[in-house]
Length: 451
Image (cartoon, rainbow, N blue to C red; front, top):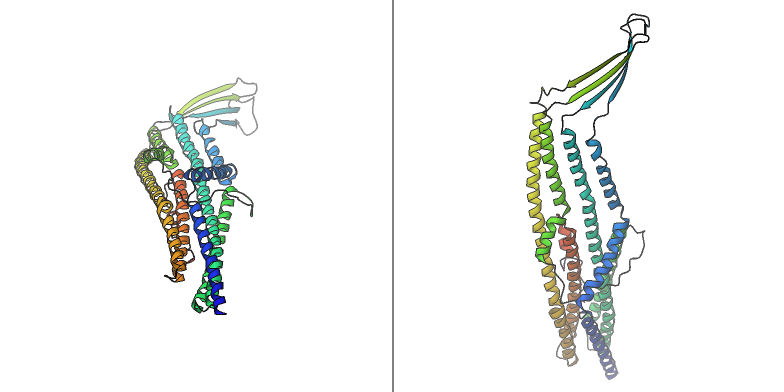
């Protein structure tokens, strides 16, 4: 009977060895995909999702409508004030006396204000600078929307790849569990091994639950960005597979691009321009404005009367009214210049950081494809060979397989982090997100099960 159990155990062990070899083979194929597939497929799917978001997202539509509203304020800012039309009746005596008394008249008066030459033109230029600054905001919304979509797409690819990995772990563990039980039945194992098998399977089911929740969460966020209905599917063909040649953009190209594309820099340049115009306008407000009026008086049967007049404003209180506004405009202009210098440096620094991060992730991904995963597969094969000869305990095989799967999840996290950092780079945002940095760093997400 014992010999029969041992034969059954050896048969199951050979089955396990075959299953583990299959796992190694799958891992080898998983790590041998070409780099151009990684770049082309991911870009095509992501570009399609970005285009959909830009076409349907209401936040972008609202930003564009606000820009159009600001543009509509430019022309009124440079227009004259509306003229005043006045009707006035003057009566000489207690009883109505129009046409009989020379001082009784029905008068029609028109009055028009004329600002000092150049004031209206400057006011129009100030309003135009404001409108152009508001017109930059849809670009920021669009870039932010694109970055969010690309990051969510990377999150979705990572969640789905992790689901595939944990399913492979579960399939592999089924064979391991059978072997441990056979060994225990043959008197060659311990109850501790059986209990550990049950614990590991439970942990894997927990991990799968976490991965499923991660996928559902990302799908919800991506549907919101795409403005798709709840429950709408988002299929993906792209997979995050190890590659040794991730393309890192040229630092010189992107550093120069950051200074021309970053919307906040364009906006602060317009604020600076607007501040300079406001200084000129504030100084011009020291000059007087003019008033012109003309009138016609109807006196019934008596000869008509007419009148014409001009007026001028006197900036008598310039010390407490106009001059403080000049100081305000000058300080705002200086503040805009300082802010522009600060934002330029910030844009350069953040772009440089993101490029460094891309280079780091590309290097780590190369180590994954050419070193870590290859060494993990060799370690599994060596452990299996030693186990079959009885030179090492079975736990060494389990540890080797666990390391392989853990490193595969870490490799997926690095590839997803590369896509997220690319999204940050293309977004040209001046915000440094600690959460985004944490997501792009392997090991900061929920940990994998031990095997």
